[in-house]
Length: 496
Image (tube, rainbow, N blue to C red; front, side, top):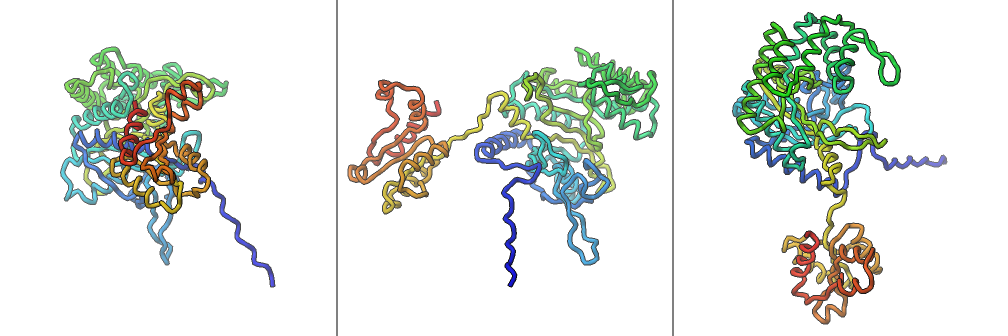
């Protein structure tokens, strides 16, 4: 009889483009989400949890790649005997699901509808350093009003959120532009309905921060040599055609009124361009009335959000402080949030125009920024560990843990093999526990417990002399009924 071949064991490895998050990182993210949700709620937005799975049809054609229904997203086809089952996909952002939710429930929802949503999204894209296929977003959107007050409010809320999570004023800037102004520039360039040329111009504008005015001019016309010496083909515009783009990109002035004058020159007689400038003026006026100056939020014509569904104001939050890359070179941290007005997204479902505007914050980017500023650490304080000296007295140890928990102190009983006491303390160290509680038979008979300050003990072990060790004991014997009081005293001392 042939020997049955065993199935190979599965590899214990994370799928490409994904990662695992452990205690401290999860705690940091949870705290940040709570802070962001607090600001959103303070502004009057209501929470919404929508499904992580949508039909590909509902997600629409705003995917990174759209040649196939599952390109750019994690998608599958529902089983159907005729092979005509619906295509389903994990959501790639939180905005497309909102459009579906509003269209589906619009008769029950207030108008305007103000919602915030937080959670993971998934993108089937090529992963890279710091770029994962699953990441968290925090969105806030207002659906059902064309008022520029909604856009101004989103910008103000974004500013307040950054400061609330720990990015101080001066370390960030919310920059605002309007796609209508850009459309006006494209109009006066004479590109008409040539979508390919318009897209090439937008992609070139997006490189302004990297290549500057001269580089953009070259890329719009004949092309240029990049830093490596390779030649990059230009869009092929004439110098006269390129001039409105240059005027647009260089229109930002020290005074916002002068910026608007320069923008009017860039859009010429374009009515859509003039409409965009008027909307920016309204936003600037509202923000100024709310006390949000140019040190927090500014009009910046160089901001061109990449997503195709933006129809009006767009905004981006950029962190302005410098960090060092892996080669030790200085660079700015960059964008951590962005958004804008997307008046046509709900129309896909209803056939009727529904104005909407919103912002999305990249939580993982914000957490990385706070680590760069030294405002987050990768460690978190673990629980108080009640050690086990006698297996037969687990009830006593469980009583101690209950007392500590009832007093609001995080605690646990050691549940491993208690035979080797040293392993229990090693376990406490690995958990980053602040305190260990010890009660052997002798302590039980005398009605006392030993309480070990593990944080102080580690500090003393590193550097203290014998005399300092005697003056600063890290282990205390206290009456059993003073267990909670002494543990709390030690914890408060560690926190100061």
